[in-house]
Image (cartoon, rainbow, N blue to C red; front, top):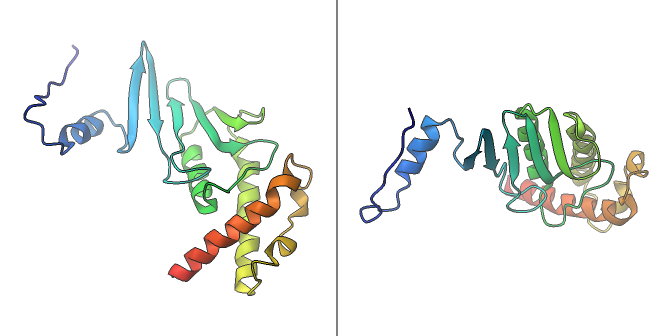
Amino acid sequence: MKLGFLVDLNLCMGCKGCEVACKVENEVPLGSWRLRVKYIDIMISQPVKAAHTKGDLIVFLKGQKVLFVGDLVFSGRITSLRDGSLVGSLEALDMIDAYGAKVIVGGHGYETDATVTEHFRSYLQEMKKEVQYALDEDVGMEDITKKVTMPQYKNMKLYDVLHARNVLDAYKELEMIEDEE
């Protein structure tokens, strides 16, 4: 038996109570959308407010355990943090791993197995740790890129182009968080 849902839009006051009730009933997290095409369930969600950019989306094919994450995951190359957030990127990676996908399709690179997030996460975590240490040691913005070089990642594509900028962006973000506390 198929059930439907009827709403009189003339009486709707925009409270979204019907949307919330439907999501709860169908186990769709708030802030996510679920589509069903033929026999394929497709879940679309924004894992965090800002990670690689504001408005990053992921698409999960639940039955197939395939997760499309766009530029939230890079394999074999350095990312750019200029329009996003170091902290948000790390939170998004945790959420990506929580899906339990067998295949993760990122925006760049050829690796697609479930471990694709590990190397990317290690780069971001190491950067966060080193930049935070530099902040604690009162290293100024003018010296941060000389202090946080992370030579173990030098062989990754775009290191020379993006790494120093990432360090500077991470410095600004972590300094703002420090100031708020």
